[in-house]
Image 1 (tube, rainbow, N blue to C red):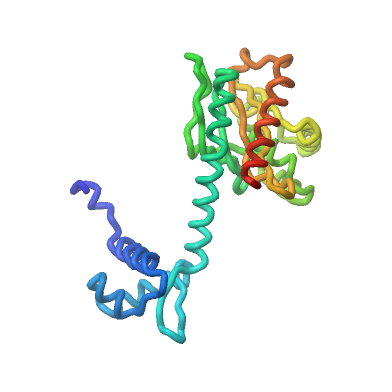
Image 2 (image 1 turned 180 degrees about the horizontal axis):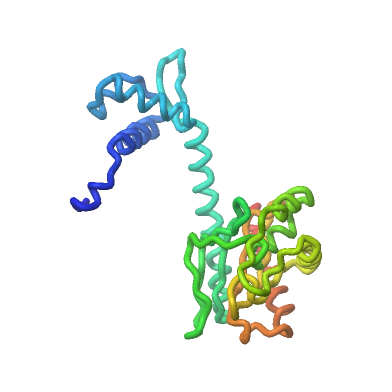
Amino acid sequence: MTTTSKRYIVQPAQKALAVLTLVAENASGMPLSAVCKELKLPKTSAFRYLQTLVEAGFVDHDTQTNTYSIGSKFRSLAKADSSLHRLRMIARPHLQQLVTEYGETVNLALQQDGVVIYIDIVEGTHMLRVQGRVGDRHPLHSTALGKAMLSYLPEATRKTELSRSLAVRTSRTVVAPDALERLLRQAHRLGYATEVEENDDDVACIGAAIVDETETPIAAISLSAPKSRLPRLLVPKVGTRLAEVAAAISRELSA
């Protein structure tokens, strides 16, 4: 670690993470004395770190044995990370196949708090192509990815999402609730959603939802291209193909 980067280290946070790591590595639980000994921490400091982690749900305290072990919050994060990794692993060959077929950029995203979060992107093969970054966030309502997932949400949940303040990304962004509802009903009927210049100028997108056994959306895939390379006549063919691929990923995830 460089001297410059060391300046930004928060020592208490670093020590708390060391305590958490130690507890996680000892599945049978650790008494306070063992934590102090392993990390060479004063008893009062170690106790405070542990109690903070207990309060946050990352560590559990067994009062009968007076030992500390991994808590539910830590386990849920680990499970979420494992699920995310599995989704990426299953989806990636399908994304690559779509790029091979169409030469356009293909995306994989999740939804959270009114936005889509890109978790994987396979760039197209054209010199001029749509480019994005993993971790980018865009509104649900202005993206084909978001519309595809919204179209599978229960009506009450969907209305809650659409009751948010909807950002106008371009002059073509649809924000009127009635118009959005019509688009979402159409997307659910067709199996894919579309948007043309609603999120970015000169960009068109087609998206399809990945769902679980109850048809609850858990992610979506999309194909993005310059508007000129995704004319209206081509949309049904590409949309149907994306819906097929999304359904295949859904089946593999449920297997």
